[in-house]
Amino acid sequence: MFSCPSCGGKMYFDIQSQKLKCAHCGSLTAVEDYQLNNNAEQRAEDDMTVYTCRNCGAQLVSPDQSAVAFCSYCGSEQILEEKLNEYKRPAKIIPFRVTKNQCRAQYKKILKKSFYAPKEFRDPQFMERFRGIYIPYWHYEGGFAKGPVETEGYATYSRGDYTYNEKYDLKAELKGPWHSMCYDGSSSFDDTIAETIAPFRAASFKKFETGYLAGFYADTADVPPEKYETDVLRHAATLGEESLKRAYRDKNINPSLPSNEKKLQALLKPEIRRTGPYLVPVWFLTWRKNDRVAYAVVNGETGKITSDLPVDAFRFFAVTVLCAAVLFCPLTLFVSMTAPTALFLSAFIAWIVSWIYRREIMHLHDHENHIFDRGYFIDERPGEISGKKAEKIRKRRHNLSAIGAVVAGFFILLVLLMMFMDYGDYAPAEKAQLGCTFLMLPAFWNLFRSLTFVRHMKDKTYVLEALSCYAGIAAAFWVLYSDPVYDWWYYLGCLICLCGVMITCFGLIRRYNLLSTRAVPVLFERRGGIDNAEE
Image (cartoon, rainbow, N blue to C red; front, top):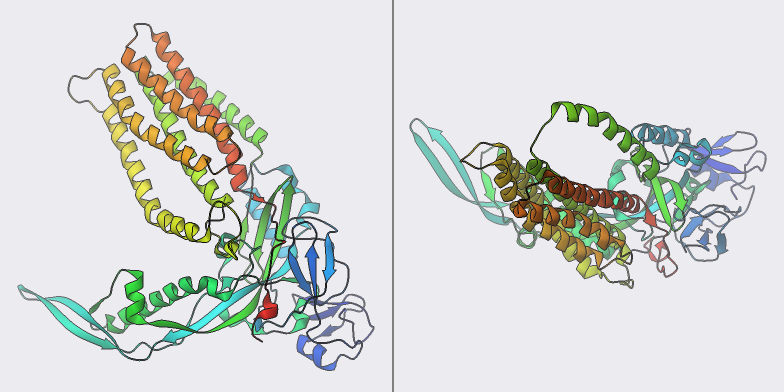
């Protein structure tokens, strides 16, 4: 325990003063001075205890020997037990600069914009459960291999009535060092959360002193620094590319550089020369329900916040029914359309919902299989998705996400123009038939892709949710091409479509709540840590 030099009381790191403060007499002591001058208690500088959560296996480090009663990762209380383990000092640390009161204020701002969040999220006692933890990050520094970078450059300019295109042989020396961003070194801290609350400013790092941990805990690092080297070198090559373009910008010369990442790295030759285990401050607020947890996470240096906010399904559907009732009257009075057109629009709504559902299932598949959490795949944890397969999926998502959105937008515009523009001698029923024909193929694609993701999931109610909208579109297609005489057939088709939409929408809310929460982490297989890091 950090004992006060004046009265022997317990000391903690005070964020506002950035000093150690006595909880009893209020005296302040600089962190550096405490370690040099405090004789109230004899203790080793590196004598820190590793506490292990009995519920999830998370390992938290503290120099304070007092009882621990809360795990920020799984939300369990009274579950930490002491574990003797060697824990060496990291190189640097960013002390907490954001207070718990500031975290609560930031969190309340988010809740104001989230009407559908469960009511317990607004409980003042719940907001008191913000806990401060130092997260281990790997910080990379490096430079570029000696020797000039040789490439071609082009310049285009006009004089009078002539346009000149000139080609140059360029030879430039890239000078370092470069400083890459920090990467999360804890497998229990999801990389997607780490990226959301980034960055941590390099200028804020200080030499590590044990006193900064007083009143807080630090997670252990079990992700080796080599895990992120591919990303670091890619980032360094981007920095080198920007530097090279900047060097010739004043001369209006554009260097010719390869677009392929591997070829660009081979040309610029970035290299990692130093990595350092650093600790950065993070505030956690954990909400747990059954086997799922939701986090509100705050950058302890800048105050940047991200929050998982599930939806209260009852409140959501109550508001939806109320809005539908309010809109029903004006739509009935002022909007009129033929029965075939109404059926097509019902099928079109079902297609849009099926497309949204496919996207939701894809994100849920990636979420539950930790596709974008590189640190999760240490030691190739057992599961259907391996680290190598996850890397391939990440690249595919990055390359195809924008293309898919553009194609879907173009398709929606095309179908709507076809339905509501006057062309030829097509009757409304014939337009509806043609429009529904256009819907069938992309609807089948949505169904096929949804079922592809569903096969990786244990809950098979996904199949019913994916089939519902497609069944409605198929029913609309059959009714339109049967061309019945009575309108009630068309309205029956509308009812089937909208029932399918309702079933899928219920599924969307359930799946959204899975996306906005996480499975309770189980980390008992954790190995490594900053105990094997460089001093």
